[in-house]
Image (cartoon, rainbow, N blue to C red):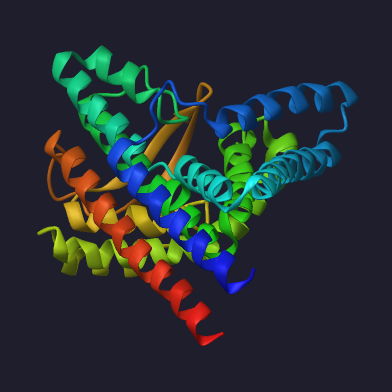
Length: 321
């Protein structure tokens, strides 16, 4: 990037970040992730016909990520031919839609509201934001599942996106979004997805490796700012950050568990089968619906800190060069 283009990209990312914090993802707004999901579904069906799923997993990852990246680049290049203003609008739109902070916070809040109506309503609303089976969860499990998914997606939906936005602009961020969406749709270890999703799951682990650790540390430090138990967040992060099958998920889950004084993990059901996950945090108290609100506040603070640090680092880099 030239210095001028870099500054325009930095400003577009900042504008997209502000728009996401204020508005989230309105349902009426055309969203590129819906296209990515459609592309994954169509490509997966085609690959399954060949029966060579292990090899097909690599083709699925390569095709979806490259098509998504190519379309994003092509659209921005086309807008650049129309003028700098149109390019800025395009970069802002892609930055805005790549981020998912406020959308996640709103969906988590809806779980708490639904749980206040009835246990069944809480289970149904939770099923919209988690991959696990929710039909038999009790109130405690619903609240903890909501806290877990907000903590985990602080990395996937916000900090990792900011990391790649400031590193390579919207094009690189949408390369990451394609891989992240693949992981959320096919990156499971059950019999149906194990062979076709392994490549997407592993590559997602690679792309989230640095952002997950940054997220965990920032979340633990953000607990002090939020009036939560920062000392315990740091302690549990240090002790339990590896208590997960994923090399990345437990970083923010451990920080959140420590900050809130909850124990996460345990037995989860996916596609009718039980999976025992290591415990994260100490079982010192029962979870309440207020913990969802506290988790949202912790997420927002963590994401804002990440924006300041990553945006500052990117700005410093252009000044030095």
